[in-house]
Image (cartoon, rainbow, N blue to C red; front, side, top):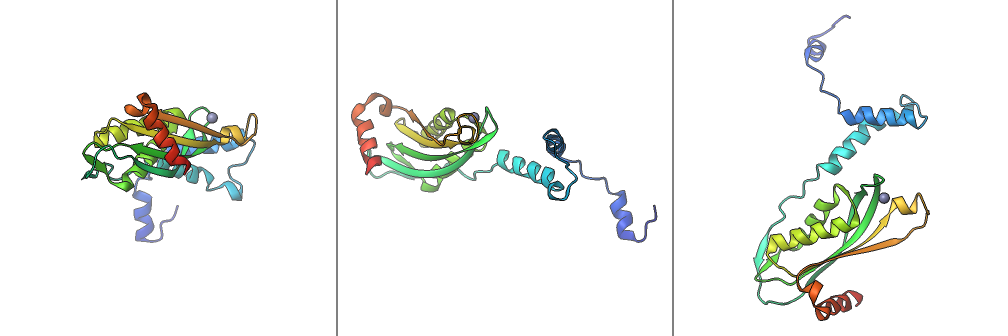
Length: 196
Ligand SMILES: [Zn+2]
């Protein structure tokens, strides 16, 4: 090998950055499904696959806990239609969810953007929809100290739409904490509000 200038000499002596093991896994996956990972359209696919997985798993939600003093109590606060993408842990296929979060502040109000951050944070991992709503509800309660929290998610799962019965369907999951689980009146108030 002939080294022609100082720059390439430095390049050659620098240790190569270790390849993300996910690149090798993607290359192997392509081979297993009968593809040639070296053909033009696929050459960069393993690296893209690895980058996407790292981005998804290492999601940084930013600060989740900005609090404001509440002016009134027992008011119902509802943040609806937060759109998140997650990955079904049974099939490693995406599902998207429209998440609605309701709570009754007990002296502390959570900043509006935090609801979306919390929802995205728990969506960016291998999930099932039931656990997703539970984790969001627990985190909201934990952040603002309110025991009465309800989380409702409507999801469409590619593992249903694309495989198996191949029918697009929406699945609804709810997590009800505090009085949302014990008071039919509070639940009706919430569901009436969501219908309008
Ligand atoms: Zn699935």
